[in-house]
Image (tube, rainbow, N blue to C red; front, side, top):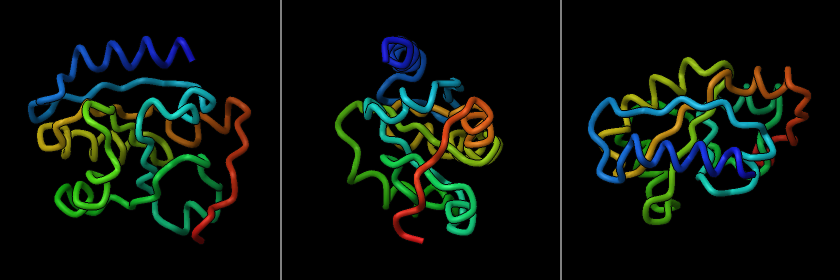
Amino acid sequence: MKRLLLALAAAVQVVAPAARAGDVVTLAPAAQDLERGEALVVDIREPSEWRETGVLPNAVLVPFRDADSFLAQVGPRLKPGQPIALICRSGRRSAAAAAAIAGRSGHPVVNVAGGMVRLMHEGYRPAPCPVC
């Protein structure tokens, strides 16, 4: 937990609450740290991927299609200043999505490096998808 808090504290310093376009922090937190809830974790994969591998139990499940619709769905769930941690399969889509929303969200944006593949390689066993 301390590791994630330190990493998120660093992220908040790098990506200020009034973030500019392109400001993204890439971190590789452990699954247990993501489950603790300091950041709003958003799994941006497709429903078929959620069914295939499972999900983090506390993740908000919102496929990323475009910045406007994504922020319309995720924005109401955010607390003031709360970081948004985006996760996908490998970290590529979440990096692109993070870049697309960073300057528009008003929140620190964290790209979860390596995505679900990394977490599972580290031994994490995701929960079944609750909406699939």
